[in-house]
Picture 1: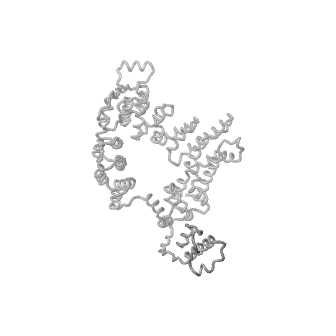
Picture 2 (picture 1 turned 45 degrees about the vertical axis):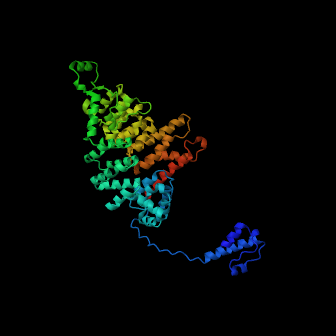
Picture 3 (picture 1 turned 30 degrees about the horizontal axis):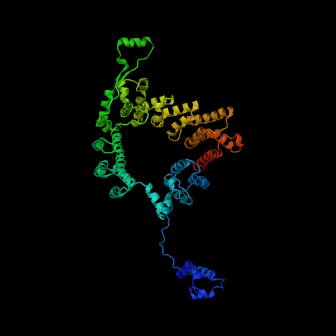
Length: 524
């Protein structure tokens, strides 16, 4: 065969005679029209000859998969699962997996290769791959790696320590987290031993692991990191220390705040002032005296207060905002002897209002103070622009009843985008009141647009309905039926009359149908 290749490379015209191969093959070749044709016939025959005589590679048969004790989903759900695995049903995959888990069902075996073929979505589906899925992954190195990355680290301490010492950054973070949950002290000691040798990015990632099981015992380590050469590491350590109410950092911050902000409760006013306020028909309010820092002390920087403000914000306001953000807002309620609403009214009227309100919003989110978050969110929804950057986080901190009330109120007002931001922070299943408010708001928005002669797609409505179909209670799907019917009717409407893009309308109809079918075929 090598002689044939060499002849092909140099050209048959440059060879004086035909190249011989095997006599039996050469003797049976038909007459060729030229040396080129003969060479091709020889090469083809030699290739077939070589393949026919090749000894097959040996392989060890793998043990068969064990029977799976978990039953698969009903056959009727196969097309829906196929579409969901292919990413054609939006975020319904998470809901499907949750329902399958509750119903103790697994994916059909025929769909497992499709799941493994989409690594980006494997996180969603792997809980329902069943015993056959684990067996199948063991036959394919890449699939096995996919599965290993999603499983919890081994409880074997030696294995965890090896991963901590030898793995990449992500593997070391996972191992340190597992060690931290097993033995917080041991994990902290392991971290302290390597921190001086690590780069800033790794130091920051490892320090963040201390949030798991954070306790006063971690304070000395975190306090020492306030002197780290990396600002990012210092700020990460400060953030964790601020979550320890009795830490030295919190006490230092509180002392600084008390020196800058001095509250006089409403009841502390003199008798004459109180009588005057009463005569004017006004309710007495606390008084705030504030002196923003003129310069940034070095010890403030050490404790995580950044020196350089972002564009558009003054230095003193920036420093003040960070200081207020470090203090639990309940402290202001106690100092002013006032409700969050009353204290915020005073702050909003102050010359440093923007820094005070923004700092309180960051603090309410950091410390999870639902009462203050609700007052701040109400103020933000009333168009306090300085609070808009914190709105999404405030939605997450407010109490569940307040979140429902405020979201429904925004729906009633027609503020669909704002309502959706709040509803995104609301875990499923949503209360019945929310489903009804969404249906009313969607139908009202379409009616108003029709009356105004506007037939363009309403993206805010479509996004809201897509989210609702994923999160409302099973029984409340019927509440959304009139909305889904509008989308279904749009599929047969002329383009000039259509309110929606056809693809999104099809998606809404398919989503509703898929969820209804799943509920019917696989009841809990």
